[in-house]
Length: 522
Image 1: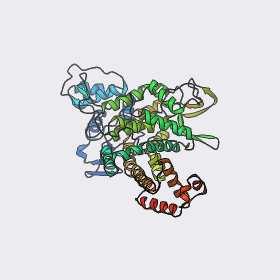
Image 2: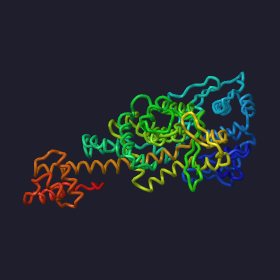
Image 3: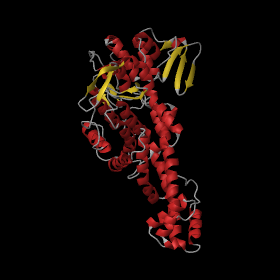
Image 4: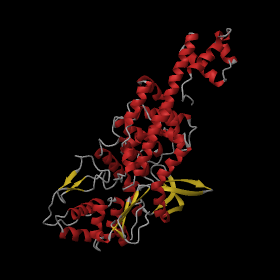
């Protein structure tokens, strides 16, 4: 939430005028002061203007200032329009039917609220974009749709039910520009395509296991293998799973038959993310109402369609984190959230099959990265919870919902939360995913490729001394590692040739020499 300056203009003035606030921090806040300055803190800007820049003391003038000089903020506009009603926008566009900011405001009012204004007779002027593509992620050039009604091009990425905000700060633009395909190409040049493909199966299993660790279920071997199999078969295949049928199929494959759910697919029950602490429910995040899910998923799908050709890092971040905030399923949301990262990367053609980037492993292997992941999620959930805490209740009686969920959770703040759910600020999530993807490729995958290269050298060294199948050579390598170079009785009985004078010592020395490859520790 925001700390607006005392003499704020633009968005700050509008927020005070209508007594509204946003759960997302506004990227730009403006005020009037003694000299013109720009202060940037953690990417957020405080702009101070001279008195000559102060807008007239009208809603229309401050809204025009916001659209022209600040970063248009859909959550804020949604809350302002809900509080103001249509009168001031109607009066403004009636007075200035050819003015670009009046027409943009009229378009945005109708787009955000679904309430139609009266069209002035003398509407005119050149077509203008609804949002400034220099400030925000918008639809890819050519994918905007002209609205003759207001002579505005609808270039908003998404629909009014789901259109996240990604501000083009210097940090976010740099994060979006990370060349995932190029980083993978460097690995392939260093280790070879064959070795990279051999690593794919292990990396898929590792990603599955780490995904369960994030959810506190890292010891469920059968479930880990099942999820790994789903990722191997389903990543980038068919239509993206963002509707009831496809999500139900995917959820069923991931969860298996042993579940308390009555059916797979979109939930019909309320849901929150939290934990039980000393027999009390602690709520960390409340997900959108079940009645909103279908429209929101369609909006997420529209975002991906409208932004085709843009940064795959940005698109995969929006797909994955947008999905987990919508939380459309009664169970399995976290796994599909992380599945979607690789799914979009595959669909965008930057990660070839069968490679799966072990992003979950990169998060779980480093406590600092796990905290970074949690902090990123909290950038939405924490301010939202402060906004709606009083609207959360737990009833005395449990309710059994048609999807098999039994719950006494009651939430009455849907109207307050809806602008946040629809217009999530996902800039921090793009930056986080870019960082994790780079770390995944440059550290996780490089370490795995080094290990496999060294393992191949060691296996070849063993077979140079004694002819044996690969499986037996691997047994020898494992025994050398596990027994600190000593010959175990079990292996000596299994392979009598190892007892010949000098053979085992020669093997150990050859293996150690072959493993002299930096970064092979696992």
